[in-house]
Amino acid sequence: MATSPIKGNVVHPAKFNAENAVSARRISKNYGAVEALKNLSLDFPKGQLTSLLGPSGCGKTTLLKIIAGLLDPTSGEVEVNGRAVTGPGPDRAFVFQDFALLPWANVIRNVAFGLELRGVAQSEREDIAARYIRQVGLAGFEKSYPHELSGGMRQRVGLARALSVDAQVLLMDEPFSAVDEQTRRKFQEDLLGLVANENKTFIFVTHSIEEAVYVSDQIALLLPRPSRVHEIIRPSGFRDKGVDNIRRDPEYLDIVDRIWASLRSYVE
Ligand SMILES: Nc1ncnc2c1ncn2[C@@H]1O[C@H](COP(=O)(O)OP(=O)(O)OP(=O)(O)O)[C@@H](O)[C@H]1O
Image (cartoon, rainbow, N blue to C red):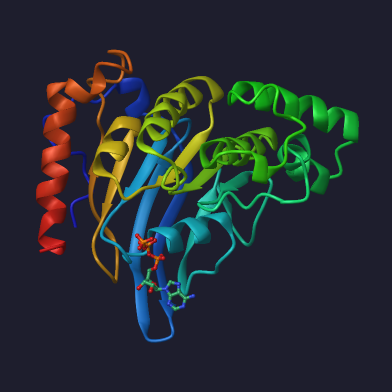
């Protein structure tokens, strides 16, 4: 198992030395006879975005749910800021693939829902929700209902809800898979802005190699089931070159190729 950064990438020293917000240690997870994860260890640096990338069914969602505290590992443990995870907690927020919005509640109530569950007073939670609704580009839609919104807008509501509870760790399970390509690219750009400005730790599951390379400070390549970390890649050289230049940057293209070379054996 190689868990060192791929040689040849320029690693931003400040980012490389960052402390870890989340550490998964020797995680195994069996579903009956199915071994999903086996002895998987991975650190998630604070304030950075780590993507989990790997063949379908390798256990990415399982790992995310274990970190969220929604699922117990068969063995091993997860620490968030040095404290062992024993269940869901306010330090982590989950952005679901299917948005998980309340159909009977308008946008502001949906965004404020996490705060409502935490007992925050209505005027305060609506102020906070309104701020994040603006931040994700949904100003003017506060009173709309989920069925009146496009898939991309619903995804933004889910993101605003996760941001508004002010969790330090955001867990995102293929958050952009249900939207069209243009919307997806815009989300990816916006996500880079959030990572830069919000000082939160993002853990991001995606099937897309290009998406992982575009948005990530760190990419963990997982092996097929029973899964563990095959390789850790830290793209860094193109991060400051502007969102429009990333996709034609030689380092970006090189990393995309190398990941594909690594993963293609599992799909052939
Ligand atoms: N509740 C469950 N009961 C039994 N097996 C399960 C359960 N949940 C997941 N699995 C199995 O565990 C393995 C890992 O599943 P998981 O959903 O974590 O993978 P994934 O990498 O997220 O998949 P994908 O990329 O297709 O979304 C798969 O083989 C899956 O069939």
